[in-house]
Image (cartoon, rainbow over all chains, first blue to last red; front, side):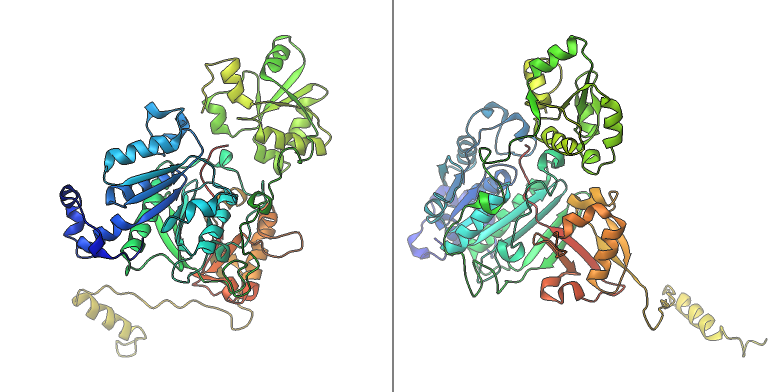
Length: 392
Length: 133
């Protein structure tokens, strides 16, 4: 609860020692520590952003922390998702995170929601928390978190990252702007470079997540100036912080004067993501890594294109493959080279997991060049054919 | 020419005085601009997701006196950027925000917002960040 009756909240003797550095800080003090103990925060996602922020919230003594995540810990998470450890690979992230948080501070309560946040469950899950922290990694969930917060009248502490750049602010707080005021619509799928091509500096979500935790703690303490109305931009490569003004949009469909959104909507549809069953049928064939290996070893006239980026090719590649990054197919510059290369031979195309090669084959088909997509990409090749090719 | 009529007399005295006081001499720099139709360059910050379309350049110095003129020059020089900034009917996309210094052009005069030489224009697209697909 925000602004609780402080007389009703008692710290245990051991908590006085634990929170000593807060208690001697005038801006927190005993009253502030009691506010933290009375507060409840919902962390949506326990990934790159959720990890550091949940660790600090638990350490700070936020009384009840909710964790929403449907995923399991993967080895490739550990480069940045510091709440999880190697021994938890393959186990649910919410269990891993809860275990770690209680080890840091047994005086906090951790409630887990092992599910994806959806239009069906979001209001029900979020209604029991004072504020929501958005640590998600996709546009549909970001709009879902925003709309849930606006409909429930709860602050939304926002953070987002891409490669070396991060954004952070506080939405829907003290009549301030919401996410839709900043970005009325999401980009259509495929227009912005996907994270598979993007990657992220592991430390970046640490910085942004800790900024989110700082804002959450200040909202609980009250009185402090927050990021509401300001969009903080962080460039980890150039090591620069900048801030931009953020204003409420009077035309905002959910928090403006004429509201057209009064309940949660279908966010997959809003973000232009169609379910695979309704998606257009691919215009190219698909083959397994076993079929590819057979064809390669039979000495057939076959051209294998690898459409990943050069630094991914360096990590490992299938012998005899030709590296042509997807970007060079998208901008058309590599089309003549591919046409010359194929020249009547059979064409197979692969990437890391099969998404980018599908995109490449779609573009090539428009140019009259047809080929077969390698299902599962080089990850499947590593898993089923040649384990010496590293998975990444 | 005598010292009395030397045109640089006042400057030399000022420099000597400042040096003797330990103050560095910083001459006033005046930028020459034509009174009408003046051409000036404005710094435009390109965000990480779009740098692949600007030969990885973080900043560009572009000519123009309004946002529309700047972005027009930008998308003329870097053609691949156009579909990322504009919809098919030529309006700026809703997930691409443009700021003059720290103010969103939606709250100024949109594409007609004037810019001058000391302004910094930022393009800030929405990012969702996180999972590796």
